Image 1: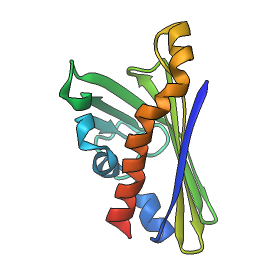
Image 2: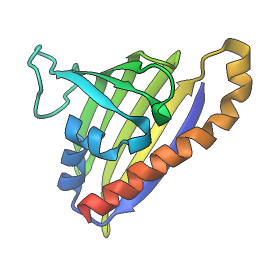
Image 3: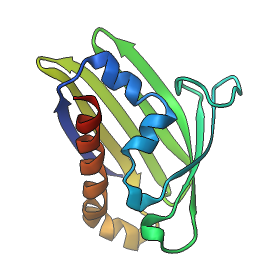
Image 4: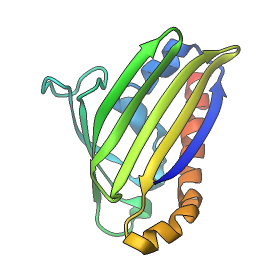
Length: 159
């Protein structure tokens, strides 16, 4: 498995940063336009459509069409973990359907002096078997602009 990680400190209260990332509006606001994200539906753990918070057991069905090229790629994510305690919170989504054989994205938030530390950690496997494993170190080239945008946009919207 390969790992990508990025962190930044946002000069905003912990609760505001955590809450912003806890629903589909945050996902839409943080995804670069060139990904052409479309959130098709969100469902809470009890089957409720459009929940206020993506709790453990929630499902997000979306599609992307990077750079407007090729057919839309379906992406179904399950929120598989969510915890909060003493100025720290995390949630993890795992791809159930999509372009990667394995994708788990852990979102961490920690109250620190001057604001909130935001950490994105992705454990992934590229498609293509042995060729995908060989190319894995180069995936950073694709992930870096997306996650740099996410962190910059979080700061723009919340600071």
